Image 1 (spheres, rainbow, N blue to C red):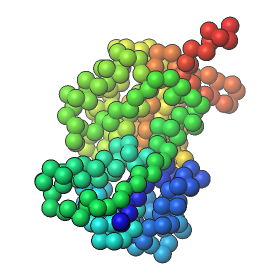
Image 2 (image 1 turned 90 degrees about the vertical axis):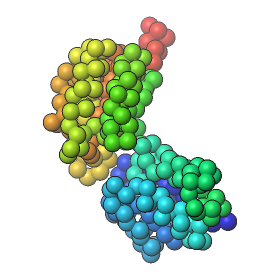
Image 3 (image 1 turned 30 degrees about the vertical axis):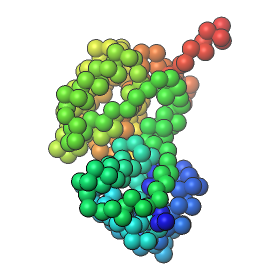
Image 4 (image 1 turned 120 degrees about the vertical axis):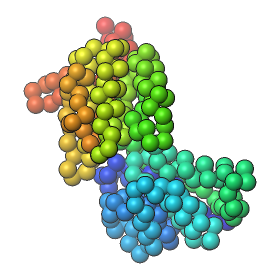
Length: 259
């Protein structure tokens, strides 16, 4: 049986790539990815056949990976972060589902053995950089309305506000889409204080990383780009400062035991 590894390689720091991910890449003859992800991985990709498809060709990458694996080539389909979170894993299984429904003409895909290898997500990397922001219940919301109607996204933001979840926003802005983040901010301001801490993490764990901790009232789309993760604390999240050090944490309720 042929093998397809579906691999998440973490936020960017080579030290945060899981050993299992490295093993999967080393075991593969063919690597399918957006080219930047292979560049970040460096030497571990040497000697492999690279299949670099640009942004916007996600369906093409998933199809190609399945085709290569079905043809007998051990293949790794690679994404940064966790490949199961807003990434390529879902497309692989959606295509298999379509095949099972008779909507694809690639029965050989069903003979491919698939192994998903998780990675550290941007929200985990960002939370670790500032302390323990995800210390209690949290959720993620993608602000891209390319595939999901804005009405659905807006409903989910309201639900996150009502539930008082820490919220990590993926795809907060793009070159053609810059209003959703400020709208999301205004929605959350209906449910939590203006002083709620917000993490703005750009290029997390990479050489040009930048981290800012601001308040929800200060959050503005003009300070964010497509390489940025935005995480908003809940009503109990705390921003603490000790000289030049500052941290954000979200308590779970241990205070009752500490007193």
